[in-house]
Length: 124
Length: 199
Image 1 (spheres, each protein chain N blue to C red):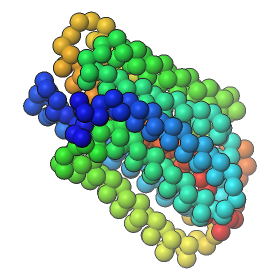
Image 2 (cartoon, each protein chain N blue to C red):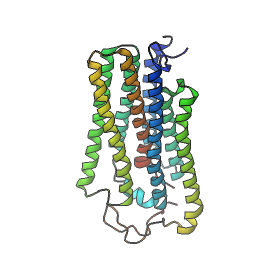
Image 3 (cartoon, chains in turn red, yellow):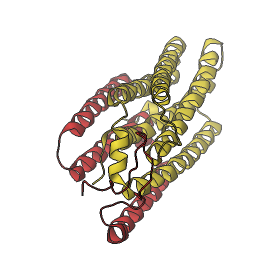
């Protein structure tokens, strides 16, 4: 039982870290760092939070290689999927659709009931 | 310092080790389930970032932030429930499980408020592509929260009745893993839907 007394303290520590990171990510989203920086800061904070949950709360830190591998495999597939998508989008779509967005044709409805045509991508 | 959470501690059977491995495989399939939708989100949003930004500006950041806190707190109480179950503290297990259920219900109440507010403004999944993917992602996540609440209720019932401490610890850990994944998925959905803007 060595260290067992510390374990609930560790969980509380992780909770406060997660809460602080949540406040940080909400705060950062209000800062105008540029869309790219905002995006990466948000993703970085989310990955940090997820790592804390997976390693400490889900005990992945203490699991064997096989379990870690099972956990890592779908994450690798997801990263691969996202990377391929982003590379494809940035290489091909911009040249094909310019700043207008791939499906911002006139007549596209939005929740305001107005057409969204040509409105996409004005933040490039 | 080999950890108690590490297992095996005395009484943990091979059966539990197998069940836990099975749970990890299931969680892997859950990650891929959401990966498909998040992939669709990336494609759709990249295709028209401006429209997504305008539509998602109508989502409530404070409500989503409160919901994030609910889930994080529920992950803490779940971890403490698992910890208590591994130390045979039956009463604490029940209390922590109930706290987890309450926090999960809090999440669902806020999600319901969000949905009904949107519906009252005439915003449905068919309203626009951004809201279609918003309802798909948050809807499936809420469904997972609901399933988690059911599993937690069953577990809480078991914690009230005299049962084998080992069996309780095993079941608690399996449900705990699932619950943490539900939290983990929300950790990504929150910034993706409510906070971030695509370049």
